[in-house]
Each structure stands twice: as C-alpha cells, then as structure tokens.
Image (cartoon, rainbow, N blue to C red; front, side, top):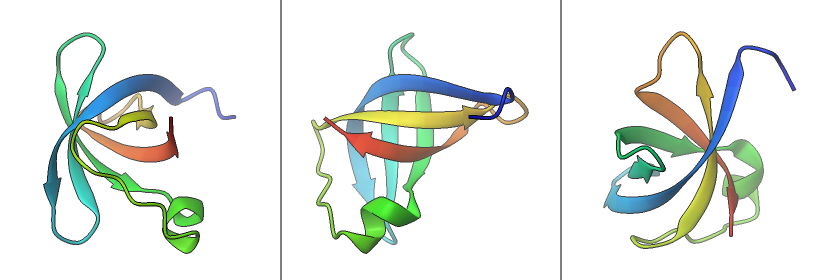
Length: 70
C-alpha cells in the first residue's frame, strides 16, 4: 500500500449509473466512489445498504474507490 492512501469502511447510501456510489463513511461524511477493476472484472453486485471498504487519496477526500465488499 502507498502512504498517501487512506482506507476506511462505509455503507453504500445511493447507487448511480456507471458504477458510481455515494458511500457514508464512519465519521459521517458522504463520499462519491467508483468500484475497482478487480470488483468490476468479477461482476460483484453492490447495492444500497452494503458495507464496503474504500480507499481515499489524501489529496481529494471526497472521491474514493471501493476495493472490497463485506
């Protein structure tokens, strides 16, 4: 892992077209997230209410990438 990556857990609030999601992270903020290539490749379904793990860059804390579905 890179030092500039922040890993947090969250719950999917809303699903948008093109594999984009609104995720509420543990501190209460809403983040816009896409899914990573591995999840997209394996056709993992993510719906509202799912618990997910996502990566945030320290430079832009409002966008993230979903890396795992619990």
